[in-house]
Amino acid sequence: MGTAVDAPRRRALNLLLALTASACSSGDAPEFDVILRGGTLHAAGDEPGFVADVALAGDRIAAMGDLSGYDARDILDVTGLHVAPGFIDVHSHAGSGLDTEDRSHAEPLLAQGITTVVVNPDGGGLVDLALQRAVLLEDGLGVNVAQLVPHGSVRRAVLGMEDRLPGPDDLAEMKALVRAGMEEGAFGMSSGPFYAPGSYSDTRELTALAKVAAEYGGVYTSHIRDESDYTIGLMAAVEEVIAVARSAGLPGVVTHIKALGPPAWGKSAEVIAAIEAARAEGVEVYADQYPYEASSTGLSAALLPRWAQAGGGDSLMARLADPATRARIRKEMEANLARRGGADRLQFRRFRPEPSIEGRTLEDVAIARSLHPLDAALELIAEGGASVVSFNMNDDDIAAFMIQPWTMTASDGALPQWEVGVPHPRAYGTFARKLRKYVVEDGTVSLKAAIRSMTSLPADVFGLEGRGRLVTGAVADIVVFDLEEVRDLATYTDPHQLSQGMVHVFVNGTAAIRDGAFTGERAGRVLRREDR
Picture 1 (cartoon, helix red, strand yellow):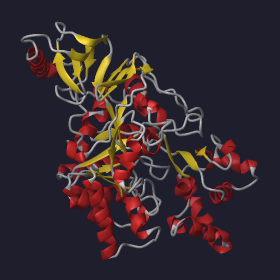
Picture 2: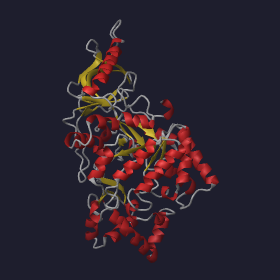
Picture 3: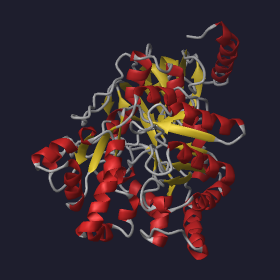
Picture 4: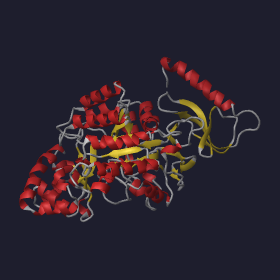
């Protein structure tokens, strides 16, 4: 509900809606495919909700306003429900699931209201975006996909896992790969200088490649070099994103923003101040965030020093086989384990050689193997590695980042296989959890702000034209939800549970969820930057 301050804008908006509807009133009634009647509309997340009808024709929003005099092939009474643009997940690892026949339906995403995902984050993913697009489309798509050029994969294609800076010829080859990806329609470039081989880059390399993305109007997103005090520290890592954005002249995104581990807790205020200062000087800096106190990564990424990973897996195994080098690696792992809060805060989510450890902590596994946690970790890495959930964040920092007007919502989730492993619950629950816990239960953010962080803000940052807003002529990516029923059911120990509360979800004008049930339709598209 609006306040007195909102009244003038509300009257202007209502007048616009009335004019939109009246434009269709002359002659015979238009033939709409769908009318959503009587819902509370959140057109962009930057205005209070208002009651109006929405008509769909083909893949577009055809009219909005009082459409009581009009008919459609399908009329849905959504009185008392909330109608919003389809949610946009700007950091998704779902690309490697959507490209498979058994997961291209994207049901765990649709159940949260997600209609578009941005893939290839953290510098990872396919370099050949044309190939990725073809594979994604082979079995149909439940949601839309926007691609990024992954810096880490580009670097690996040119330099392998070498721990060195590129020479002039190397950099030229890397630029050519970034340019090829942007020509294929990518929306920008992602990096992950926390991970090998991205960690072997410097700011100059990242800036040089980001400048190529900037030529095409792209963005730069980064899993920053350090979210704690592993190497350069949280503040310096945030400043690196700002420096790249400033020098390359494009929007920079601190992706899945956090203050990781006890050494960084409480530093959200400094990070926010740095981003605000950069924005005040005209640098476009944003962040995205998932609403959980735990992160997820590989056991090697969490604990191993990066020098130990140089050269790839065979080189790592050779180092671990040498007693002196193994001892050095183990010594450096001590501080990394402390940064993660200890062995009882690392929970295994996937370990193919021994699925029985999935869902258990490193401390539990170490006790079972009669080993020190670091030695148990080294054994598991030698046996093939594992992925972990890491409980390392402070609630105050989570809230501080969430309330910023430049913070988008993102899952950082993959598209899990049903009942396989114990994935982070964010894969099933991110968007529903933000609405349930942080809007309804805790009141950390308003419904208006939460919806904006999921719709119009990411659409503006990534240049997803025609999406992220309910306006006549926009693409009909629409969610209709019951705020009283929206909730995430996935937990850390029992994650394979779909969120609930989405009554209807439309992807490009086609119902993917109707009356709370999946329709089986796969109307998603692989989007291209030049389509905007």
